[in-house]
Length: 193
Image (cartoon, rainbow, N blue to C red; front, side):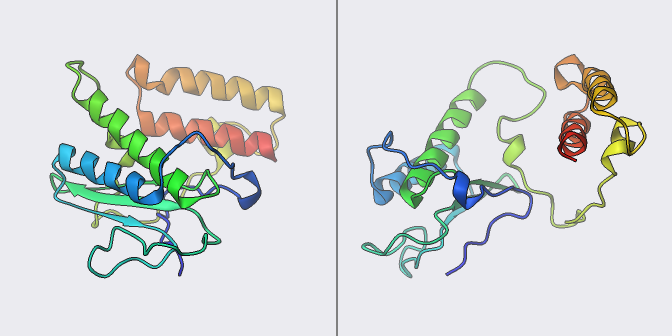
């Protein structure tokens, strides 16, 4: 079975996945905890996906006693207030640990969302998926154009341009978060070349 990983999210390279023993729960308990968080959030609908065979009577739960899948990733999708959300984790080598990480992430975000602090957006904004009528694939601007430098600029020029653009677009200074992220990615892309 293949995991339907959200196209908007990067996957962890197999060699970079980590084994952990810090989560002392099994897969069923990890999913139960996610279900509790979904109930607390009051979501309209949710589903958990893995590369394992899932039960037909309760599709959020894989059948017990399956071998570890080649892809240990876990994807949680939900709808709330007309918006679609997805979070995914494949950082760990076992689905139970990835599910646990997702459950803890959602719990922390839910708690932050309930704090009486004003922010520029919902704590879950980063998990919001594009609307169905939005273009799923947006042509990306070349990194050198984002930074407004030549394609063959040296690392010093790239870093200086990125620093100036990040300062200009930083969300904490009233800038646009999306534009800020494009600058960060452009810098990384040019420094990786």
